[in-house]
Image (cartoon, rainbow, N blue to C red; front, side):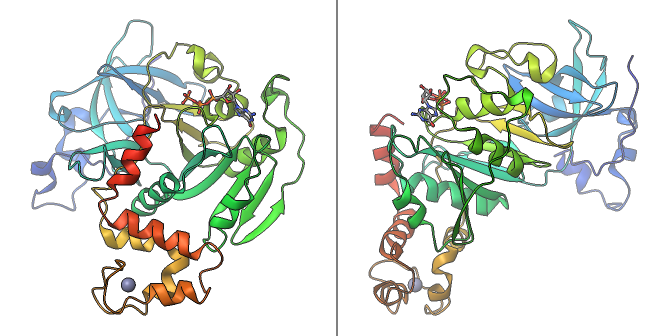
Length: 379
Ligand SMILES: Nc1nc2c(ncn2[C@@H]2O[C@H](COP(=O)(O)OP(=O)(O)OP(=O)(O)O)[C@@H](O)[C@H]2O)c(=O)[nH]1
Ligand SMILES: [Zn+2]
């Protein structure tokens, strides 16, 4: 049952010595003849040094393979979403263990540092196309600081952001939607609204497919789940949000998996997932390649690893003013000639301009106050 799939990827072994080889144009797999028969897998979760990958995705031979990392990769972080090469017993049969020997080059890499002063950068998720930032309209109170830093991290990683506002039955999220009106950001609310590129549209009421039938006791409106499903279709998305905002509720409604109780059977066919590590899940009623990666452990987004210029670029709604700043402008409150204050005072950045500028300055500063208050609030 160990049918091989051919390896025709551009492997990044994260092995600098191999990559630095003069014959750089030669396919790297040739330099590793041992691995010619490696099968490709998508890492769905990592738990205590064990990597679970789905192999032969969307074929009859699709299976979950558990693997341990080869010695040569022991210093390389490998995370959910990574595409890897596996050798050895890749049958996926119970109690078998394969060897993870290669790491494919990533299209994107979402990273964070524990806080803005922590130089240690952590890899969160690989190959995500989209970052779904989940906040609640209330309980817990949404903080734009968290959204803004998530946006900066997404922008830096080249990942498309999407803002999802849950619990709109508890509080009116209009102020939050207004806050991002001038930014080209799609906003979904649990009332089923979509804001794209500055306009608010009511989402089409689509019927809930059988497999996604939500429990009557769930406070979610089907409109949001279905609109979100459409936005996830064909993409690898990762979901991020503070505890209690309703991520599990959303993921469960989307996938039918019961994350809280550790059951992933509906998605992977077998196995239990009880750790708090990131987990990639299939999304029913979507096309091939649709995955959602839940990151329960990630609650704050230190930006120590992000170039300040990239942070500035994530404030696209202030971009026109920034273009008028003197060269090398730090955009700080006391930066000489900074065009931002006048721009905002003239109302050119919209009603939320002042708050957006404040947020930019906070992120460009140490940002510690914001991060600290998030921690103090028990996020
Ligand atoms: N009123 C209301 N409650 C909701 C909504 N969505 C989720 N909840 C409730 O909010 C609580 C927290 O939801 P979870 O889905 O567990 O939140 P989470 O983000 O996964 O939280 P962690 O598992 O701690 O990361 C639960 O009691 C849900 O029933 C909503 O749209 N409206
Ligand atoms: Zn400036």
